[in-house]
Amino acid sequence: MSSLPASSLVTPGLARNAVRAASRTAASRRHWAALLDAPALGTSEAQALDAIAQVRNVAAGQLIYTRRDTAQTLVALVEGDAALGLRQSSDGQFRIERMLHAPGWLDLASAWLSGTHSLDAQAVSDCMLVELPRSALSALLDDDANLAGLLIQALAREVRTLTLNTHELMHKDAPARLAAWLHQRCAPVPEVPGQAQVLLRERKRDIASQLAITPETLSRLMRSFMTQGVIDVAGYNVRVLDLNALRKLAQDEMAAA
Image (cartoon, rainbow, N blue to C red):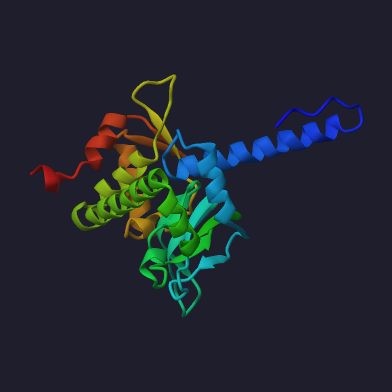
């Protein structure tokens, strides 16, 4: 297609629209590339996913879906924080089993099984979701082997993560589980080699729930790590003073034996 001639009347508007369209395309490609862990994802593949995607916004505190809902779409979180777990019917309290920070998949598997979601999902902050209907996605994957391979790999990574989480809950003691949880969330401190920091985005009781311990035990373990000189806590920021010591605390001693 040839470029349009410049015009003082139409060019500014067309240019703004073109910039907005290009920005939306780039943002969409980044979202899909992050969800599929595919930095080289092509624009055409991102556009194909956009064509079947359903965008949904959910306010903080609202349920995204329940484990009784029929799973007809693959559900991804592209903005915000969400929790997976069980909502108690007696008092409405939400028992968190796993926190998810965008971008990431809330449920990549259930739709393929023609059943219900395995857990409840709730928005922790205002969230933007992207859902892919299974039937439309199946047709798309039939025509794009590369995209099908990327989705299989994404599903495999989810299975691996859940397997490792289950292993840690079953075989690691509470201090090792907390150390592993902190280590997974460490951000390096470039100016101080061997140190890191962790920003706590969740409430203490929600962190404890994920680790299958009580909030009181979590507080006691944090104090113990501080006494050992491994971490320092200031508000919602955990400074890891000795990254190597944290790694040792997180090691699975039973597997090493």
